[in-house]
Image 1 (cartoon, one colour):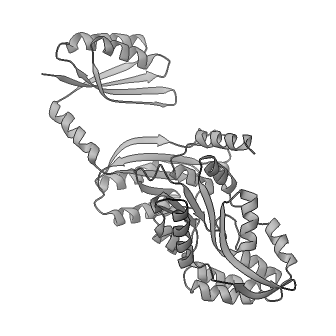
Image 2 (cartoon, helix red, strand yellow; image 1 turned 45 degrees about the vertical axis):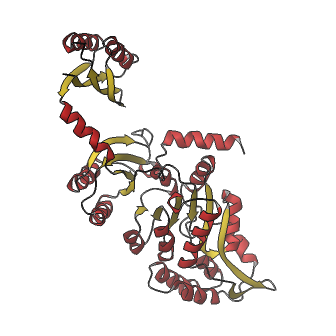
Length: 413
C-alpha cells in the first residue's frame, strides 16, 4: 500500500534547507504532491506532502530526514495521510476561491481575528496569508505607514451579501478596509482604470472652488454635498450650481487648476499602472478644463467631463452638450472597454459620490474611495484608510513590486 506523508520542517532560515531535504527525498524516488514554504522574521516553515513509492521503506527515509534537519538546527514532524484523506483534499481544488485583502495604516491582531471569524462563520477556509506591504520600522510615522495582508480563501459563502455587510461593519469599527474578490483570471488581467476626478484624483470639488472665487461658495457647496450624498438629482443640481458661476472671469480657472491638491498616492498609482500597461481615464461630472490639466500632469489616457461655456472671457453659467452624470459615466466606461477590446471584468472604476455608483457596479472591480456612507454601502469595495495607491494591493501588487515598476517608469521618462 502506498504511503503518503506530510513533512513539516521549521526553524531558523538559512541557505540549503530546502535543497538538503529534497536531495534526501530524491534518493528514495519520492513524488512531491504539494509543497509550500514561508519565511516570517527569519524563521522558515517548509511543508511537503509526499508519496513514498511502494519499493521504498519510509523508516530509513524518516531517519535520514530527521538526522539532516537536526544537523541544520531545524525541527521536523511527519504526519501520515490516508489515501482517502488525500483524495478528499484533491476534490477540494474545484471549489470557488476568493481573495480577502485587509488595508490599514497598521494591521492589528484584533482586525485579523474579526475578519478570520467572519470567514470561518461563512463556511470558508483560509489557505494562505501573505503580507503585501513592506516591512515597517518601529520608528516610522504612523500617518505615513501602509499595511496590507492578503488572505486566500476557499469555499462557497453561505450568504454573500450578509458576509459583505459583516466586513463593512468590522471595517467601520476597527479602522480597516476589507476587500473581498473572486480569485479568477480577470483579477490578474485587468487593463483599464476609470477615475472620478473631484474628491477622488484631487482632494477638492472644483465647482466649489470656482464658486468661492465667484463669491457664492456656501450656496454651491451645500448643493454639492446633497448631490454627492444622493439626495438630489445630479444633472439638475449640477445645472443649478453652474448657473451660480455666471460672470466669473476665465482667468480664475487657470489659477485654480495649478493649485489643485492631488490625492495621496494618485501619482504613484498612475505611474505603476502605466508601467503595467494599463489604460487610464477620467470620467467626471466636473469640467474638461481641469480634467485636461490633470491629464497632462498625471499622464491620463482619456478624459470625459463637462465643457464649461465661456464667452468673451466670462463664464456664462451653462455647459455645452450632454451633462456627464452617473448614467453617462457608465456608458462611457462601457464604450472605453469596447474600444480597448476588454471584457467589463477587466475594468476598474474608482469614485466617491452617488453619481459614481452606476460605473462602480458595472466594472469588474468597483472601488468607493473615501466615499460617502451611501456609496460605501452600495459599492462592493471601498478604501478609506489609505491613499489611492492602496488600489495596487487589490491587484495583488506588493510594495517591492511597486518600487520596481516606479523605477522602470522613471528610467523611461
